[in-house]
Length: 117
Image 1 (tube, rainbow, N blue to C red):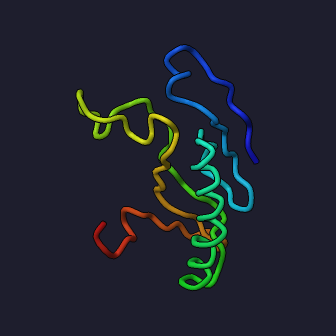
Image 2 (cartoon, rainbow, N blue to C red):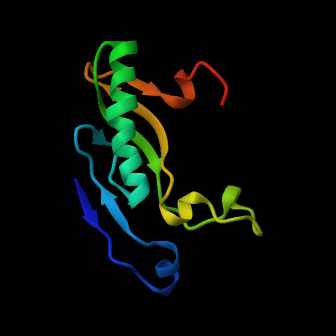
C-alpha cells in the first residue's frame, strides 16, 4: 500500500520528485517510509524475490515485518559539510535494521549478520 506525496516547500521540490509513502503490503513495516518510485519498486522486488525466499530457505518460515531506520533525510553522505548528497536526500535509500519472523523471532542485521560488509 502506498500514498502519493505532493511536492512540498521550495527546498523539498528540488529533492523530492515522484515520491510516495510505503505502508507495507505482504510484509509489515516497523513504520511507513517515504520512497522514490525506484526505491518503492526495488523494495517490493527485494521482498518478493530475495527476502521471503531466503527466509524460507534459512529459517523455514516467512518474514512478517521489516524493521528499518528510515529512508528520507535531507543530508550529505556521512553528514560531511562539503559532501555529496546522500541517496537518503532524495528518498532513494532505506536502512534495514532487522526482520521479524512468523514465529515471533527477531533477526538483527547488526547482531546476527555473520560476515563483513
